[in-house]
Image 1 (cartoon, each protein chain N blue to C red):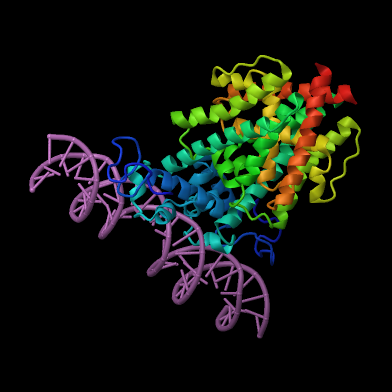
Image 2 (image 1 turned 90 degrees about the vertical axis):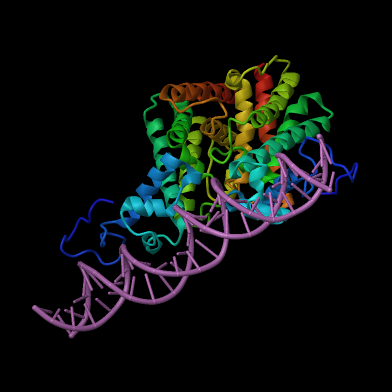
Length: 221
Length: 221
DNA sequence: CCTCCATCTTGACGTTGACAAGTTGGAAAC
DNA sequence: GTTTCCAACTTGTCAACGTCAAGATGGAGG
């Protein structure tokens, strides 16, 4: 990335900042993201990431234990982005009643614009699911949605433990609907996408599906 | 699969039947399924499959072009099983109004009992999505659901082209909901599963979510 | 200036998917 | 019933991968 900004002569003491390379950890994460977008999840290679970062093939081991470690970090960043995507989409929506749909569209748009990352984030085996920071990031992404749901429906939904995700069938149903739409779209099961116009069309579809579901939800309440 | 039926002395001319090995193609598919269940999608190895089938590492190439070819066939078989699971679940349900939910539970139960296969079936990059037989099998699994939906709701839904999947927001929404539940459950996002009792609990949850959704759907109609 | 250690490199090992070339054995032709 | 032939399978090889071990390097702290 850009060269380190402050105190070019002396680097800060501890945190992962400037070393011989500059900041290999983040450089590797960015390289990994690029590889994922270009070659997909199954085309990911640790050595390729090292190559793009301009270091030897064994260098990553000093920042991430192994390939799974790097991928876990990439997934964590992905969840942060997903959280932010929902937050931004929600913020851009003026109508209170459409907040949930806006967040959902943000969710789906993220999935469609970062398909490989999205696939990685929800894939067992490639990620260390015991990593605390990863767990926290993943939970935050869901929490945003619960929070929005709560705001729109006036229901008080708290997310205290993992089990709570399954405790409210209404929230679970909504989340599953959105996640299902996102995964089906990403995997091309809803017809070929890729192009920007197709993505727009799909989010429009998603919007109508969600509108429908929510209207029903409201009708019943 | 079963040994050739006619003319035990003489093998039929063309179709993949008994060779030196017996029926390597199916043996490889079965080995692949075993590897997937034991080691997961990312632990899959062509050579391991060959080993389990008792042949050399290059033997699979004569039946499947490459690893992707074998995995595509495994995924195709998986879709056949998914179709059958839905059909069986539906057949066991006496109440007409609950047919759709029964099929959906069959869908989710399949996903939970064959997690690796399910993940493979809906994963880009590992599968040849241009393979005709695969496409047909995948479409059939969805067609079962559309058919059931149609039977329950009296709506006439035809599945003529790929684009039709996205044409009816009602069907798409239902499918997405179920698929979302299945994928989230498989990836452990709804809490740890694995155990049989957990699976039962999850399908019960799914049933209630679906009941809720369908009741709303009915209310509105 | 010197020392130390995190960072990075070099080299190696075992394993993988794919390819090429050789072997085998049963069906078909004679 | 012998021969021919070719699909099915084997052996050998290659580049690339992830991981480990051991060496090199250079900036920070003494």
